[in-house]
Length: 407
Image 1 (cartoon, rainbow, N blue to C red):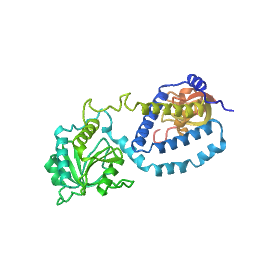
Image 2: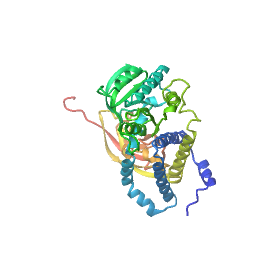
Image 3: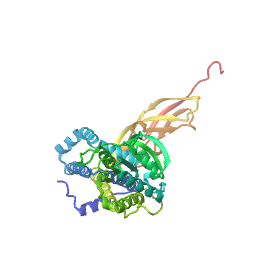
Image 4: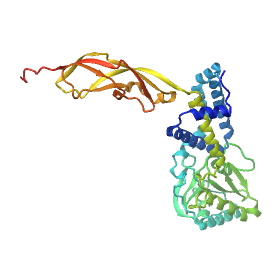
């Protein structure tokens, strides 16, 4: 029966395994991908779905480790269906993951636009005036996420932010007053932008608030909403929307907007650095542990030990002078035995394996060539050549007689 996965057994196997730079790099790359996935699912409130996938992976590893043939066979047989189900269930999260990975400005060394203080002052002044006049409005401050895939339409503007400009945009006579105004830097990038509706219904709120919540569910944007019926100011952020009591607008709205700008858009040391060890340290530690566990389970346990495989490799000749030809070759193939870890063979293309002999200095006549490991071409450095059979090849080099025109 397979040995239990105790801490001592893991440490013993780990310490006796030849770990190189390639293995550490492998774990780091996997840890980065797991970290990105964990953050994404956490952000979209779908972490429970990620936990379900993790349980299935653990069951598969458990079945392989303890030799549960039926369970392993079912997982292998339905693997293609699992992939399709995974893509269908997580299509929204997967799309956001690819968008997140493709955004160069997501990384800490990228430049952020500095939002002047007067922008928040002008926005708050406009929002308060719109609320008093009971004029509906949606004002969006993008965070680090790209909104091009979730926000559509809109009329490009590029005007400098001011209370008067925002009030004119949401005036009922304006052609884009029903949409959202997108603020980037100190400019109103566009207005009349269409936002996605929330996936869940929300009581006491209309379409404008559902659109604000829909964007908050799909991005890290900060959205301010003004109700047309009651003149109530609401804030949508992190998949949640909250109506501000009238007596707290003067304090909470500036504070929430300032915190958002400081967190997402300010340069320098004001905002948190995602690369800092203490930022999201639980997620980073979890990702490292998951990467190590996967590496241990699939590389050491399921692919443990060194294996040897034999390949029939053709013989080729190179650098033979043009006036010679080769005949009576025997044998035409050599049996090459390669040794290495099971995962190292995945980088081997057997069709590119060959025995290449240099005949540049050869002369006519019967030849006997002793094959060495240096004559084997196409084997990865991670695999070792342990045997060549046979080691001697015989052939004849014949000089081509000159044609009558050359005589």
